[in-house]
Length: 141
Image (cartoon, rainbow, N blue to C red; front, side, top):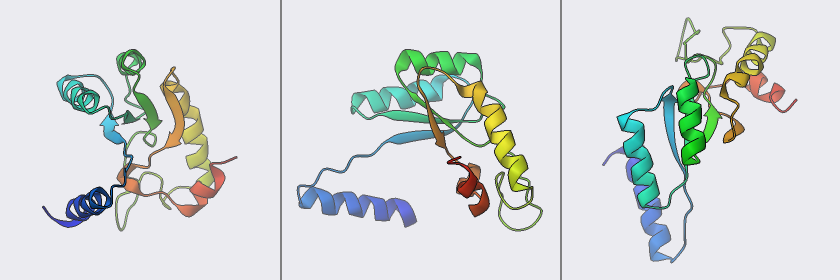
């Protein structure tokens, strides 16, 4: 085990030795439609009583995925817009500095409606875990 996973595992070990319960949730990134991998993930989560949330890409999400999430009581989170890199230098980012903040916020709001279902939560999950601070500042409004 290397890096972040080893660190996470060691933190769980510390908590277990102290008798402390650590609550976690699982998230599947890049979801667009149901399939065997998602079914396996759901089965594993269910077997351990763990909640499951999907970081769904709005531009590619199918109605079948939303219906599946409702049926299985799986939370739907917004994973950017279309999971496309718009940066010309540096690390990949869809919600980075390459485009105007107002345009990004408008695009996030406009496409959010594609994800609305009974289990949708208004939670943003930035692709590549990167989001420009000015976009973050505008999200609460």
